[in-house]
Structure formats: structure tokens, C-alpha cells
Length: 257
Ligand SMILES: O=C[C@H](O)COP(=O)(O)O
Image: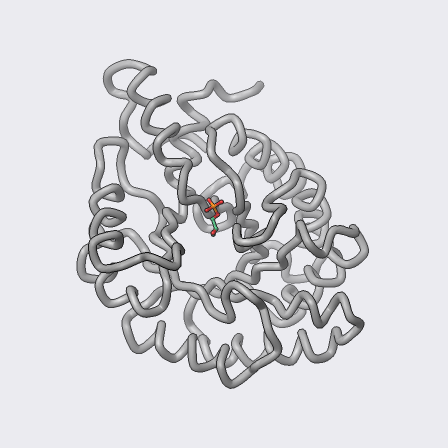
């Protein structure tokens, strides 16, 4: 049975990494993000910001909302020391989660070992924190490369596979999501790994597509913030509109998955 739009909106909110990763971000922008997280619809799963804003987000986010920050972002280079420095800055500022960009261009060029080495080094550097690996699936483009990138993350011990930075032409696609989800399902540690759709997700109807894929491939029990996230800078508005339009008593994020 297809969940109704309000149920989908509640699920999307509970699994939302409310994101602000603009070059022009300043303290006011992060303050506004934290205010959004405390809005009438209810709290998201996390905030996702630049490393320099982790301390402010930590101080201003509603209780229970996790703080994520990006590393090796957005370019996804091969500089291990710089990526590890990003992680250390996030950890020192109290961040809970790291969203790391895979060196996807290096992978495309045939340097899978170099890409894997950076992910492995970051996994060690952020031990104890949630690590999401951004594959930049829209640019990897082929199922074979998306699958290879997924295995790099799964073998390195990441906690989530994430589609996109939202900074290149193509963001999340159902086709790439299916490849990533199947890689998770087929991997020995897959039961402990989640999926994060990001890049261009603006409507609850967009989120419904990925919720259905997670339910189909990982099972209904995986449709929780522990195994499903949405990285989005422009989804909360539609979530709020759907929940407000669904009548009184439907503004809580708690809801069936
Ligand atoms: O998760 C991180 C992405 O930057 C979000 O992409 P978006 O701005 O298209 O929602």
C-alpha cells in the first residue's frame, strides 16, 4: 500500500539532513537554519553545514538534532591530509556526522586504490562518528562505476552511501539509488549501512520515490533515520506545506515509516 502524502512527509522530515552549504553562508544563515529546524513541522534528523559552522549549529540546534558537516567537499580531491583535517575540525567542534566526498574523479581515471585509501584514512580519523560517503553518482554515471564506488565505501566501513554533493549538474537519480541500495543489500555488513539521497530533492513526491526504493530493496524496517536520510536545502518547505495542508494534528515528525 502506498503511504499517503502526509505520512511520506513525516517520514521525509524524520529522515531529513536539513542542509545549508552555500558559499555565502554566514552566522545569520546558520542561525536561520537552526530556527527552521525548530519550526512547526517538527525536528529533522540532522543539520548539515560547513565545518566552520559546526560549533554554532551545535549550540543553536534543537535538542536531539544531530550536526553533520562536509569533508573533502565539494571537489572530492585526493588530498588525504586535507580531508583528515576537515574531520578533525568537525570532531573538535562537536560534530556528530561527517559527509565525505569520495575522490570520484580519481576513481573515474582508474585510481580506485587512491580513492579507497582516502576513505579508509577518514574512517579511522572519525571513528565513533557517523560517516556518509558521497559518491557523486550523477557524474560517475555508469552503474559499474557507481557499484565500484559503493563497494569502496562499504569495504571501508562507512555508515551511509550518499548520492550527491548537490554542486554538480546531476543530483540524486532513482537509477543510481537502485545500484547503491543493491550494493548495500548484497554486502556482508549491509544491514548496518544506510542510504542518503541528496541533490535536487525539492518535493515530498521526490522523497516518496526513494522511500519506496529503500522499502523495496532494504526492507520496510530500513525506513528510519538510522538507515535513510535526505540531504536537502529546499525540501522542508514542501514538507511543511503538505503537513499543514493535511489538517490539525499532522504536524509532528513522529509518524509511521
Ligand atoms: O546534501 C547536500 C546537498 O548539497 C543538498 O543538495 P540540494 O541543495 O540540491 O538540496
